[in-house]
Length: 168
Image (cartoon, rainbow, N blue to C red):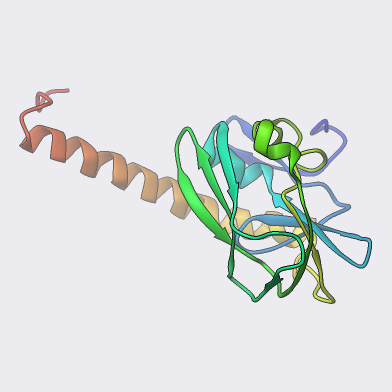
């Protein structure tokens, strides 16, 4: 997907593509209505925080009923490891088994081949692309502050442990 053809949010120099043909959730899932439910994946914004997705484990199987926030997938990236909760209630209609052998599809093709789960549900995503981008515009400065604070805390800890010179 080319950012010149799709709306995007600028994260510093990185363009987080936000296609207009999908809906969005506050916890950075996208969803596309398909076959009586929602095909769901991670937005290009949040997958940037994982950097490269290197491992993925499904916490559910096809046919399982899930409630809002029930664990559905554990994702390990170069920068983060998280277990993600379902953005909707429903029945697991499908999982993207291709990701087990090739988890990098989450990064390479987040809105197409990198989808994660398909949930049979009547729920709809609460945001369109414009509302999601507006949310990111508010969230981004706080994210930058949090990352800077965490880096400084890690630096101070290394100094206290004698593993880093204070002048560095």
